[in-house]
Image (tube, rainbow, N blue to C red; front, side):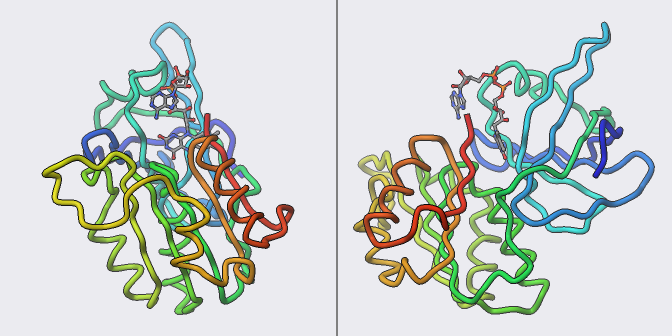
Length: 236
Ligand SMILES: Cc1cc2nc3c(=O)[nH]c(=O)nc-3n(C[C@H](O)[C@H](O)[C@H](O)COP(=O)(O)OP(=O)(O)OC[C@H]3O[C@@H](n4cnc5c(N)ncnc54)[C@H](O)[C@@H]3O)c2cc1C
């Protein structure tokens, strides 16, 4: 566990129209261990001693000297500061936190339900599982507003292919002429039934905005999963 440790911003990458990937390295070069799915508290420090802290899911895989985050640039208090961030800036990091994590004995049937930047913890989990040379049966349903919102599409598809898993992206705001030929509309029980008919036999993880998490928890329960066994992380 680290508390308010200085981390240097080493890379800023505009990943989609609205999401930027920020990579940080511990100033003293040490690495931290965490379970995939956990989050870190990032603190921006102003020149006048002002501090703003927010939670972000770690998108890379443990153990690591780097911490990577997929951040929706919504122009709020913290994300406005990040709009002006430069490589070399120092933030404070406290980590790892959270109960939303892939257990070391993660089982052989998983269902991942991601909404928007809620993909981040699953990115960490997928990388970790690949690193373990394990091949559980994974179904990932990923909901985005627009086709251009898919985070790290190529790498995501490669990881799922390497695991022999199934990836379904659903676009909730499809538009004429956007070329989208995949699923449309909000993820729901019908979509889960279509891509994971055995959902009740899977360990299910949900991460995303509150309305996404609530709706999909209810969908899983309607399909026979015990609510207590659903692992969920709600943002906002
Ligand atoms: C455990 C955890 C993990 C998280 N992981 C991530 C992550 O990996 N990536 C990430 O981007 N965020 C993540 N968040 C959210 C993050 O902590 C901040 O809440 C978010 O970045 C907004 O902070 P802000 O200071 O910029 O906005 P604030 O000034 O705090 O304002 C937020 C306001 O914007 C609204 N809002 C929230 N989200 C959106 C949105 N997408 N679009 C428009 N308005 C919105 C809220 O309702 C609120 O009114 C996570 C939150 C939690 C609790």
